[in-house]
Image 1 (cartoon, rainbow, N blue to C red):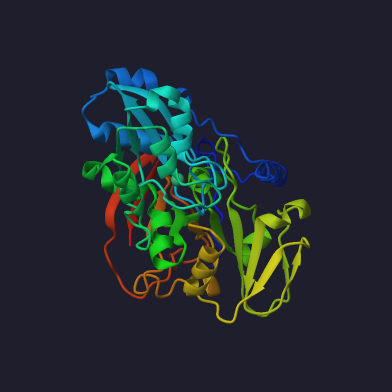
Image 2 (cartoon, helix red, strand yellow):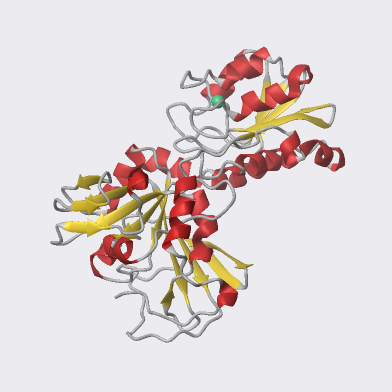
Length: 393
Ligand SMILES: [Zn+2]
């Protein structure tokens, strides 16, 4: 069942965007934004003078604020922020801007310069102790001669957990975990942690509803979430008839479009995807299909299940995916049949618009799922006159 056509008020910015606008935004995604990673960019020095200098939680929360500046850019790495504090004053700060770039500690130590000596380094996640694309951060902290290190949480990877802390301690550096803000640090990287432990991408179901329960399309309502997610799963039917969901937030890197094509159609047209942007989409299908525009990667799967799809996406380095549930029905909904029992979906986000919408059909949602259950840790907030509800499965 398709989303119901409704007459929507401009006040809520619900008019579908023209194709030109969508493709222009898509093309900007090809340019990696250069994020300011220094402490001064975040205004930390002036904030620090007014803060509680004895409170580890204050500085760890600042690390999390810094880390969030790179939301949507760091996968498969986690988001990490770091501040260096000496004599009750923040003297350096930074965050990990994207995979392949130096880690947060390197930027913060560079920002602090000689003032890092005998200082306390706060990091939202345990510093790494292995050689990857960049040298280990433990060595950078040891070389900078910091006095102690406070971490927001230990590494979630059970194989390497606490190795960074052990290395720092062996070099004579005092290390403590800020238990007070551990939950905040875990939430910051909930998708990274899930991928690390479950081997699957963290999945969030998302939809927009009218006051009378009709599924609506609100391109503006999804823009912030899209900025934070690595991929968005949509149905082939939706990709054929609608503009692709695009984030209009400043500095956003557009998510990968994961298009589910099922059934007997041997052709799939994605009219709102330009040929030069073909690499921004991948089609997952249960039988061979010709895709227009050419150049879009097609993966023919042995079994079309959400579990398998989330495993494949995790193997490709995606930590988080949004399931854009505008197309309420058919085979797409069947993917979600046992999402709760099989722990395939972690979160649900519903945007409720103050609109009474006309529906041609029964208008009920078919989110899948075979049993009723209450959501956990539910939060709500008002965004641009709409109510946003989110909860965990
Ligand atoms: Zn590191």
